[in-house]
Image (cartoon, rainbow, N blue to C red; front, side):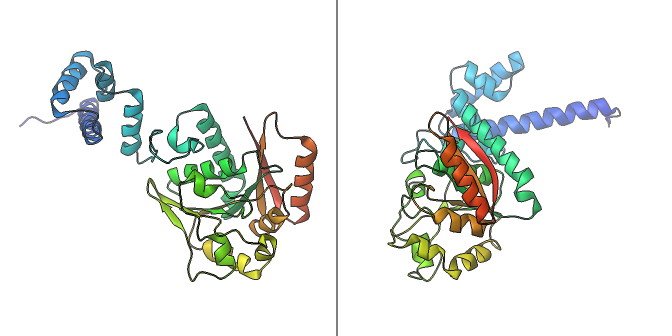
Length: 295
């Protein structure tokens, strides 16, 4: 019986075995997605062998699949959940899910990295996201960060704490009949959260019924108790807050979260309102974790 004696030969065999396994997985994923037919496999494998290509490269060169198809299959292989941009009902604002390889998504991943290093590293779990004006992108930023943390496998809860102009139920195509406000008002017996099918570790709590007294609800001791309880069940909790120019709700929320990330928009935001927002956050005893300028 022949034996493999050299380390280089062993490595070559291991690499070849891995390559075959990866190609087989890629082919099956593309077939399962309806992108390849069984009869296409032989053509792809033949071209792959002739030109020493990866399976996806060969399939794309034959015109059988697109680059987007390959990326979607790779997302499944590496357990990195994304959603096809054409999926019905999904808001195009959810860039991290629908266009994860775009410049915008990469910039948002940089923000995620900064937060992991500067805020969440010391055992903190909760962060508010807010803005001075309604058109500066706080809801967009909170939603995309929630997806990005879920793509890392973190157990994430996104709370729409903007009970005046809620957006998260629209972005994630959820109902908003019961939610955060109803829990604070003790109108429901349990947490009214929604799991996001495409992101198994992401849960969203919509704003709920429009209350006449959001600030009074947030001032109740039950809000702090709710967050404390949730922190035992989730790795990261993000709170989307109402703009500071609309209400003072953000102060109560940032005080409970102990920190806020500010969203600003290029050519829209003005320095004076942002400076005022920063001062009011600091006055509550919370930290301004940073500011993100969106295009």
